[in-house]
Amino acid sequence: MCGIVGYTGPRQAYPVIIKGLKRLEYRGYDSSGVALLSDGNLKVYKKKGRVTELEEEVIGKNIEANIGIGHTRWATHGEPSDRNAHPHSSASGRLAIIHNGIIENYAQIKQELVKKGYSFTSDTDTEVLLNFIEDIQKNNHNSLEEALRIALKRVSGAYCILLMDQSDPTTIIAARKGSPLVIGIGKGEHFLASDASPIIEYTKEVVYVNDYELAIVKPDELILKNLGNEKITPYITKLDMELAAIEKGGYDHFMIKEIFEQPSTIYDCLRGRLDAEAGTIRMKGVEDNIEQLKNANRIMIIACGTSWHAGLVAEYIIEELCRIPVEVEYASEFRYRNPIVHKGDVIIAISQSGETADTLVALEKAKENGAFIFGIVNAVGSSIARISHAGAYTHAGPEIGVASTKAFTGQLVVLAMMALKIAKEKGTITDARHHALILELADIPEKVDAILKNAKEIEKIGQVYKNASDFLFLGRGYNFPVALEGALKLKEISYIHAEGYPAAEMKHGPIALVDENLPVVFIATKDAYHEKIVSNMQEIKARKGKIISIVTEGDEISPGLSDHYFSIPSADELLAPILTVIPLQLLSYYVGTAKGIDVDKPRNLAKSVTVE
Ligand code: G6P
Image 1 (cartoon, rainbow, N blue to C red):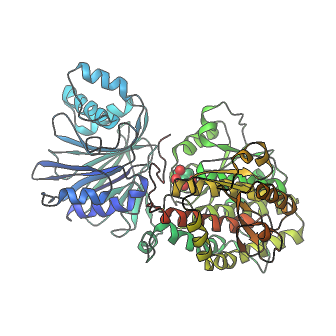
Image 2 (cartoon, rainbow, N blue to C red; image 1 turned 90 degrees about the vertical axis):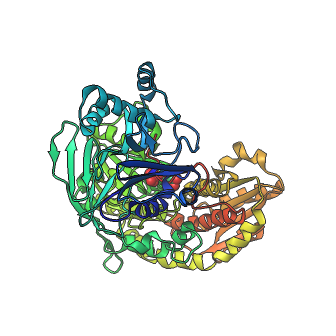
Image 3 (cartoon, rainbow, N blue to C red; image 1 turned 120 degrees about the vertical axis):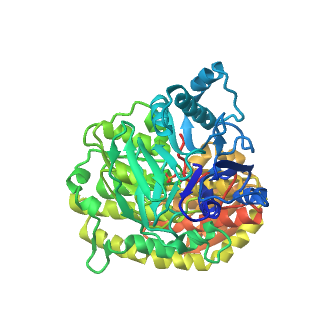
């Protein structure tokens, strides 16, 4: 959460920072700001709202500078406003800071500073941290770097901060704990950002800063240190990302671009792993740890949001194919209760961003207890990827729309392949079923493509129901988690209240909501539960609810019970969620856009939730 950009070098800093902030807006968009340093003058411009509003704000102002920092905010402490926007300046006006994260003990530090006569111009924890640093520096007469080190030893919480000092015309000091930071290495210049997207067009050489590290960044020098002031050799990695992947490419929104990318992202996820002809799957992370995985007494899956829904589908798949008990946990619950984790327990972490704070901390806790962590992550080089013992990337490419789409289908594909591999090694699947599912997986990209070709049908349905105040999504078996995901997507993107429910369980509560105004989306594809779900449709119809159904091509029963239906190609029920979720993604997109909502940046949400 919150996007951070910094630049020091020969270029004009402002355009680099603004472009970078626009790429990072998915991380938060309540307000934004820049601090620029030239001729010993620190200029801070900030504005409530989107980055474009900041651009308007600075028109006619002096933005000449070769060093600067910028921030796009997702509010934690203090409402979104000009005064709470970052950067913040210190009491003397000499220092400027941007911060992503939460300083949990800020209230106590603030009290101490207030007693010393400090006053504050914002409600943020960040301004407290900055003045704390300045106060240490003033009292101890030490360098900014040293003062920062002392301050960070006192604070609890998460942070990625960038600091500039008016008296040091070329240096940015950065520090991280729990919130991501990447440094791009150019020729005589350095770029700093929360992820690589602002950096990619300038350099592909980057350093991922680790927790408890400090970076002293000058145009031609990058020094990494730990909090004990020992130097660390920066580990330079090459970015495997193209600029086109983070641009809209002719689509109106990133979300629809990402939905339509799914045939190719799923193909990329299968590529090099699935060999349909030979009937084999290659996954190094699984192969290298197969004994651990196949002998697990149970598997715990830890995730948040859409990734948690992928975990629920995986529970059904792994239990069915591998006969290993699976528990799926919200990371935020897992980390604060007293979970039973034994040495050698297998934990699968699922995360698009690889930076979700709750997931990260839950994993750290499980790791301390000796668990084996397998990460299924989309963002290459992210924190969760790095703390996992082994893993598999989803290879969906950068996902920028706040609502997760292509990362979800990538997660399902990886989880299905992983389950097939474990089952094969464990002997819990027949060769025939194993091969049949491999062939089915190989066909998925084409089937997704076929679904997307009919997207207009969903657009029409979206138009009919765009003014509904509530929606119900119902599914059974493998499609129950898809019902949850359909409801989540619609809530996120259209602000319509929606509930996902197991279709049969609906009788124990939600049925009370049904009347002629309630649209009920049934995921009613042909599977073992088909007759049962048809009965559930009858129950809704009898109460005059409006039925929208996702059905298998050739189904002659469900369409007759539906006010609207959308046909999708048939698939093995175990893999059906990869297909059934696509029309639901489209439905939320079309309802959201019909209501005029900025679906890439829906209110109050952020893509990468780096605060708990
Ligand atoms: C946020 C995003 C969701 C995402 C969730 C988990 O809430 O808006 O789209 O599913 O975080 O994120 P992760 O990156 O860990 O998958």
